[in-house]
Image (cartoon, rainbow, N blue to C red; front, side, top):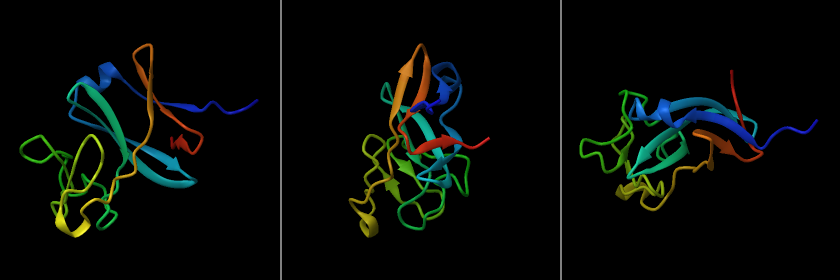
Length: 121
């Protein structure tokens, strides 16, 4: 039996209750985590690693957005990212991007789509 290419991430209802969710995943055979959030009526997911120091965006604070709510922000050094593209807006890593993850919605549930990602229980 072949493995499905869709891995459940969360429901829309679950995501509405919080500013973001994290999920432990295995991406390209490496353990890591993903962040999932809604921004301007769309849902996004990225590998939860800052491009600067490879720390989770929420490593020092339970937040992934800056005070304005317009940018993703690494809580360690304050690097900011465009939530729609994952592109770093901070000078040191300007233009580098967070690793995006594909999401698909089926009947109110969001799924990670792709063969290189599985959830870690």
